Image (cartoon, rainbow, N blue to C red; front, side, top):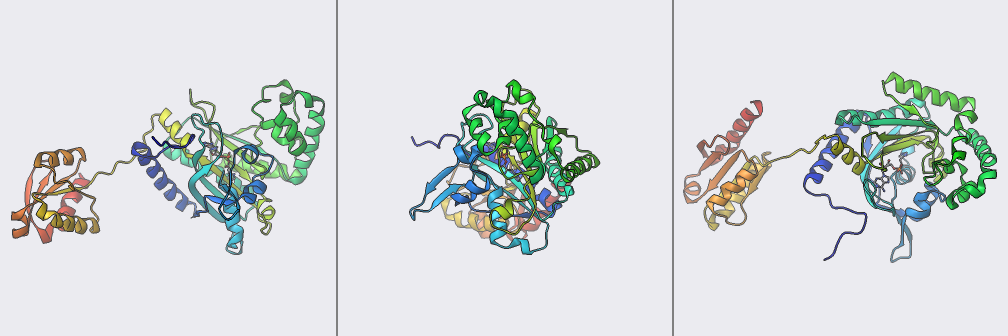
Length: 426
Ligand code: HAM
């Protein structure tokens, strides 16, 4: 039997209901922030991610799905959303419009990682990117979105961890300090970190292999290398978070696995018993040079992405059920094949009038049709037979109260409107 590729999963049943509800929730939330929906291609030129996310990052050096198409082009399945949205911002000259521009997206991302609970090769992100403001207010606003989303969902066990990487100057000073500090320990570092030492020593702090080693605890801290401007930016972000009553922890070990960040970086972790190792639900930060780096005009940016699988896992752990079940209002079946056209026609009219309608396609018996209607928890059953077609009077049964009505065909919409309206009020 053919099976799905390793690290992927199907969305159906309850999972599909949860996914759809979450999507609706996000759409409504994003309207509240005047954020605009964008959709970028699932694959882009390989260069976009290799350059944009950074060659030294784990994502690009080990995890991208790179392939050549039949025209010999180098393409990559998107491992994350930011680089594609930045490319879209530049290519469509969105920078010429009123900035700041707030954009959001929701869709699959692909990373060749070792699958485990909360870690997949195809996974879904809800992401948000704001272009055109270097004000710390925007950093706080971005963190506020994630915080509010969790609040709306009723998720309690979360913590916001925040750090700053400072501006270019601060980061360069810090980089030098790290090079000096780690030089005597080079032989104690893992192979990856020895490479990171050469290319991006900040990422040594993020290493999962070396993180418990003593030398890590005494490593220089970014906060001691911030220039005035960077410090002021960070202080303001923290103040604005407090103004919004968002509790956070400053955590100097957060450096993030992607190269494009400057100033604020943050991760929102699940603090739930037995959640497992993959507990970062959402993460993001500021990237003031990425737009320019990818070839656009210098434009500051800040954003985040949230992993849907991890969020749904967290909701499950906290017994929060967000699935929304929609049952048909009406179930229609006919007595005899010759009236199937009447069933289709009535179902069409009712659907166009706004009702949810299910019909019998398979000429089931009376008994199994009633059973099906029960299973679907429908409000009304309409049966169409010779008598109904000739008289143009329908037999309508309230499947809850078991009352039966005779309703003229041309009055059925008003009838259902009134009855279903009454039930909504009760
Ligand atoms: P990221 O930290 O690589 O950041 O991913 C963000 C979130 O995506 C993670 O916190 C996690 O919830 C989820 N995630 C990542 N990899 C996997 C996986 N293999 N399986 C399941 N979930 C996963 C970014 O992607 C940046 N683009 C975030 C950003 C937006 N920064 C600025 N703007």
